[in-house]
Each structure stands twice: as C-alpha cells, then as structure tokens.
Image (cartoon, rainbow, N blue to C red; front, side):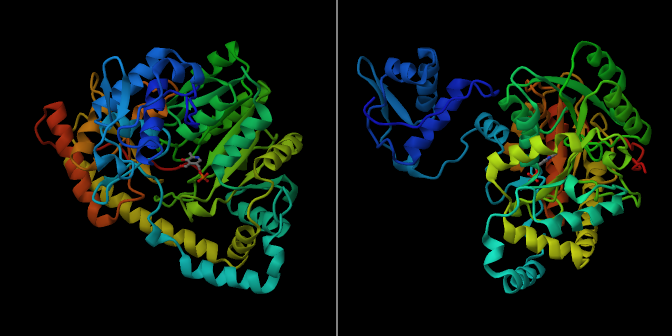
Length: 493
Ligand SMILES: Cc1ncc(COP(=O)(O)O)c(C=O)c1O
C-alpha cells in the first residue's frame, strides 16, 4: 500500500470487522485522506496488511459502493467516488450505521432530533456561575499549585470532604479508602486493569451498562450475565452460576440501574453481600444516580451496608453535575488499595488538580447540596411529564415499571417484536430511543428499549413520547388505548 493508513480493527467487540473497516475507510474519504477518483488499496494487499480475510475487505468496499462513496471498475479496482458530498462531516447514513455508532457511545443527532437516548443533563442545567466563582478562588489561593501533578490517590482535602459527604449516605470510610478518578468509566477501567487477567470471569446484571461490558471485554474477561428482576439481580441464577464459575467480581448498579431503572430491595442488598462474602468475591457497585430519588425516600448505596469490605464503590458525578469535568471517586477495600493505585497511575497519573480543588470547595461550602436539590427538582419535573405522556400515549401491551427516580425507563414490547426495528422506525420520525440490544453482551434483540428524559427539555418530552406512541401503535397494530398503570416503585432504605 502506498499510503500509510492508520486503520485499527478490533475482533473482541460486537461490531463486524467489515463494518469497522467500512466506517474507518469512510472517515478517511470524508477527511480527504483519499481524494475523489483515487484508487483504494488493492483488496488482497489491504487484507494482508490488516491480517483479515479478503472477504472482509470486499464487504467493506461493497458497503462503500452502496453508500455512493466508491465505485469499482472491473479488472482495475475500487475508486473513491467523485461527488463532493463526501466532503461533508461524517453523518450516519442509515439506521444500522447509527446503531453501530451508538454501540461505540458516539451518538450523532441532528439539531431537531428528540433525543431520548442520552442520559446526560442538558448544559442549561450546569452551574457555570458558581463554578466560575470557585475556580477563581482556587486560583487566587493556590496559584500554580493547582496545575501541578496531584497525589495519585487524589487531593487530600477533597478526599476528606468526600468522606464527610458520604456520611449523608451512611457510608463510613477513611480518607485513605478514597481514590479520586477521572469519571466512573475510568473507575470501571481501573478495576478491570487491577483485577482481571485474561480469561477471568466477571458477573454482570443482564441487561447492563455497555461501557462496563466493553471495559471488561477489553481485558479478556469472560462475561456471565445474570438476569435483572424488578427488585434486583436474580439471586437463584446468581447462586447457580456461582456453583460453576469463580468470578473476580460482580458488577452491579443497586439503585436506578442502567438501563432498567430498577432498584434492589433491601433484602436483596443484604443477600448479595452475604453471597459475595461466602464466595470470596468482590462486588463492584456503580453508583451514578442514587441521589435522584423522587419519591421522598433515600436510596442508600450498597456500600452503606458493607461491613466486611467486599464492595468496591464507584461514584460518578456526571449525571448530577457536569460530565465534562471528568471527576468521580472510588471507595476501595484496604486489600485492593495498592493495586487500584497502581492502575490509576498508569492510566492518567492523576485527576486534574484544578477540578479537584474546585470541587472540594463545592462540598465544603454546602453549595453541593443546594445544587443536588436543584437538579432533583428539575429532573423530577421531567420525570413526571415523561411518565404522564407515556401513560397517555403508549399501547397497553408495552410493559414498564415506573422507577420513582433516576433518569430513564425500560420498556418491554410484546413477544416477537424487535427493539432494533422499533429504534429504526422512531429514528425515521426524528426521535432517538436506545434499543435494548445495546445492553446485552452479545447484542441480543429481546424486544426491550430504554428512554431517558435527562437530555430533553420539558416542552419536547410530550411531543417526543407522543411520536414514539404513534410508532408503537403502528408497529404493534393496536388501537390507541391507555397504558397499564403499574404500581409506583418506592425506593428502599
Ligand atoms: C452506569 C454508568 N456508569 C458509569 C458511567 C460513566 O460515568 P462517568 O461520566 O462518570 O465516567 C455511565 C455513563 O453513562 C453510566 O451510565
């Protein structure tokens, strides 16, 4: 190949190799690395270089052709199309491609798309003014110190204020148990790095957060999926699986699970702690939403019940604060501190000192609790509008359970219907939902979908839900009827 191309194919992920190759070639065309009418690398040569079957390259080229990005001349080869439309920014051209991009966490939405797929708060909710005031105070106080490398474990005063904050959730940990991280995703990755060796087994809830699945797979873990029920993980299946496997840890989200929104009952929280102790395994608790209970109760993290140091607690602030800060923390059992510290060091040395110091002031000055209450208020309104719209617009055969908190809801289609088909139909009508298949390790289409109200303004929620309702009625061939009222879920103490 004359041109030096940086193409990387990963056979450990669900996306077929030819789609990965197609997307990367497409990028190279859009970015102008390949010019109009330029010949693409010969099939055999590219296949050799990438160590893939020639069929993979043939299929990728065919896909480029079918999208009008390339043409072939018999006996000569494949060439980049001459049309200038490829010089536009990369946009998903069809629903399948859109889905692949979602799998990689790269959702592209047009301005007028109503986006129920994102669980990220809208920027108008970000507390920019108070943050600016506190950053200025940190700069005046600490000057250049704020910009040096920080302790790998995290800025000590922040770790202290985190310990104090955790007392509100009945979590009693030491300053030395806290590891500051650059977001929960990094926490998941660090735990994977510290604990998983190639071929090790990890248990997850099924369905579960895709970012965690990818992190575990990237370390070569074998994933065992344990079904999620409305009151938490299926304990019987968990016990049976433990008779066969010896997992490094069980990854769970006990409050407002992603994607189901379900929370564990108090009994199941106690039960899973007992099981983990008996089987000498850890539980990784991913707590990204427990502050957001809308029914008055307190959704206590599992960590608050952990008397025997089996829970590795990972806390994200992205959904309740500002995701771009890349800030979170872990509370780590003493036996794992060293390994976690080493993994953090080789990940990014330390989390931004300026952000840590500013967040420390947030916690110390009680602005944080004010902010949480503000966010809770906003989200609660969106939640109520969303739920009411669902009750009005969805066919009664679509099952769901109101979670009473969090940022999303999980729906089940009647048997035989496809979540990917529903997703494609909604996208055509300008509404983005998340097909349930994204939350299963093998991408199974089980006829579920997730909708989040985090990123949609109140005025748009009703319109968007109504459209999804219309699509559902059309797809399921039912007449308009009020949805089943399912008992409201109350969080457990
Ligand atoms: C369950 C869950 N855990 C972790 C994360 C990553 O959070 P962070 O932005 O703190 O890295 C997300 C992001 O959506 C999530 O849904």
